[in-house]
Image (cartoon, rainbow, N blue to C red; front, side, top):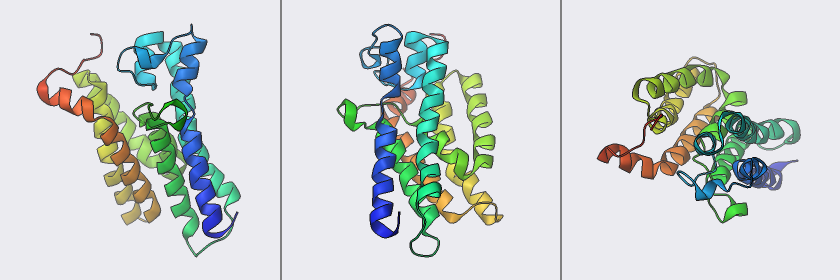
Length: 208
């Protein structure tokens, strides 16, 4: 694939891959359960954990992670020509599109998850060191506060900063910051209701 048409096709493909409603499919496989009708109404791993249990939720998480990584890898495999330096930017756009697709899936009336696992999946082949740094911090916040949403929001906010540090040290490309920032914005926007509940003190903690 070459030039702007090839780039556009890969970005659209990224959105469609991200839009595959893995959580909905696994919920139905687990017993005909529509995750949109339970808990938070989201189709991601957290609602799957609360609704259908750990083994199924682990499957949702891994496959949602793969939805983020695959568009990035596809650009590396298929996008062979364009302006100098363009492949990383096409990959960043495809990654953000995948995250947006997960949050607003065309296949399920523009509903979906909150994009955390798909965001992590997109960052994994792009800047794995960022994932290695940010995920433990997010998990620590979740462990200390028992708010999954707070850990997710913290990770989404920290990812662009951590990526920028790598870029400054010559260990990542500038396009990786665009992916981290774009993906972080999508994830934070998808947590708007959580942010409102955190501010009002009504957000549900793990175990409740």
